[in-house]
Image 1 (tube, rainbow, N blue to C red):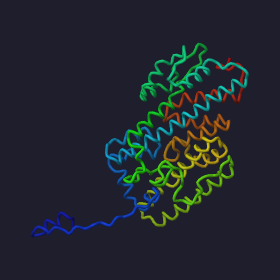
Image 2: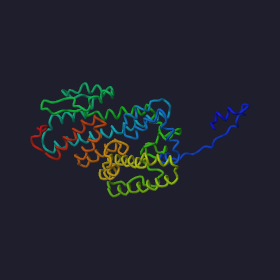
Image 3: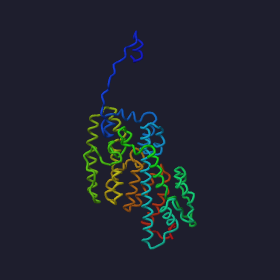
Image 4: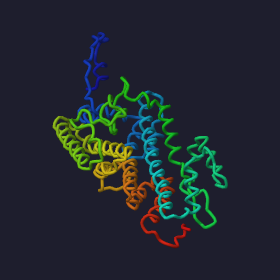
Length: 380
């Protein structure tokens, strides 16, 4: 019998019910535990106008995620800030690759004792200023105006195509796309309340699919509450990094087994069907590789990023985030494995056409470093 039919059967109006104070239920601290043991929190977060955004964020479709979180309520705004933050981080990853590629191109030509060709010198000059000052006779004035205005749509429009073809047939792409895009998305994340993530009123939206497990650790990569050391030491010790990865994996395996044992059917399905534990592991290892690169520990960066990549499905999607593939490309480039870096960049081009220019730059560098062919069409 339904509640409404039960009330209709009553001959007189029911007495007002006594006020019942529901007990406060303390939710599990980390987002993996919340999914497994309190799946209703996930259902609430992904309901109605937020569902498409979280589906897109899980699938690595960051642009769709940012556009889908359309609302002004606090939870939706924080969800949007998460997607916009991910875009800022991803474009910063690409900007660092561009920086390395430009620097390595300059170093390679210097080592040859030759003057770099016009396409290379122009790319390097443009990258050095990125719209703040336009080199003479660069043809970059219109693109520079877009950067100065922070016109993201204009910047990304035709960014997959060269903005100039030189007399010798070589082409030049805009080398400033990623740095400006990262700044713009960071500003948008701030406008959506990125600084407020991790506040007292925050819920699962601040942690879900993030490289931090708890609200108290937003923006940090400490694997609390897992019993894992916070670092792999102060040197570029590859074995220490591998042990760090192993410690994390063992801790996550134990955490996963405990959650499966305690979870109901709905929670267990969420944990397993969404690959939640594997996603946290990938996000955390990617963040660790990025941190290692920042201090020049390329051996440790490789030890972190290689096990982060899911080689069973080598494309952007639920199993490989855009930033994981971008950081893999940067690690390979930093270690002189330029052609392997190209492979990762190629996987990004379909979803991010603007990566085409970066792929071209890294491809030219691979020729310069590896083949050293005389008579190359782009070489003096």
